[in-house]
Amino acid sequence: MRHLNYNHLLYFWTVVREGSVAAAAAALHVTPQTISGQIKLLEEQLGGALFEKQGRRLVTTDLGKLAQGYAEEIFTRGLELASVLRGALPQGRRSVTIGVPDAVPKLVAYRVLAPLLATEEPFRVVCHEGQLDTLLADLVAHRLDLVLSASPVASGTHLRAFSHLLGESDLAFFATSPLAEALRPGFPKSLDQAPFFLPSERSMTRRVLDAWFDKHGITPRIVGEFDDSALIKTFGQHGGGVFVSPAAIEHDLTDDSRVALIGRTHDLRARFYAISTERRIKHPAVAVITEAARSDLFSALESPRRPARPA
Image (cartoon, rainbow, N blue to C red):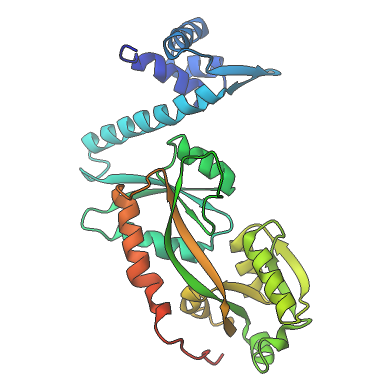
């Protein structure tokens, strides 16, 4: 294949961004016929259709999604270069694009990713939220550099992606201070019939919790179920139920005087992974967060556990 015509690729990328040929033509100040002709030439060069019609909408084909991922990286970096030359960004600033599923606690995501902002040459961090399956598809299409996840890539998957364990943490139970104080004596049996805000049934954490409840003869009184870990934390902070979070961020949670620790359990563990398309870590951002997580965020949990702090 001869070298790509990047003008053709730009027209394709603009159609994807703008949502239609007409809108792309207006954005680029050319005619719709010009856009359509240039995309047709690109399709001939790539050997397949980039779009297909669904009703009145144009949607990208599998080939189109692949081309979109590369185009996004090419033109985003081009815009970044233009910003550097204008002085809008520090020269040499590295950029990393990260997917964060809703199931990953936001405080964990912050603690894992914060070292990227504190290196000698800090990264420009771009985060996207979404469902894990969608983010993994974006990863293998090179629209993301890595995905931060609470579960590894499923065995037997067709996706060429690799899970790098960042660390693991005991799970701990939290509530507003009055409720935590009432439930702390007799933990964990005291949790029986206690009000709970829990992850939805489709999450791995929920399945693990349900098994743990069964093992200990605990029947939680479920007052709310959520896909988003941030919503669980917000509801828990404002009272009405117990919520579960990794002990690694215990101090971040209890710095809010409204929230107190009930207790932690050593036989429930949360694991966190950096998922990338590299079997061996080469991407500098993945290397930074992996080293920091293993040496700092999760390493403290290997030392003797401290007793629960009083409310």
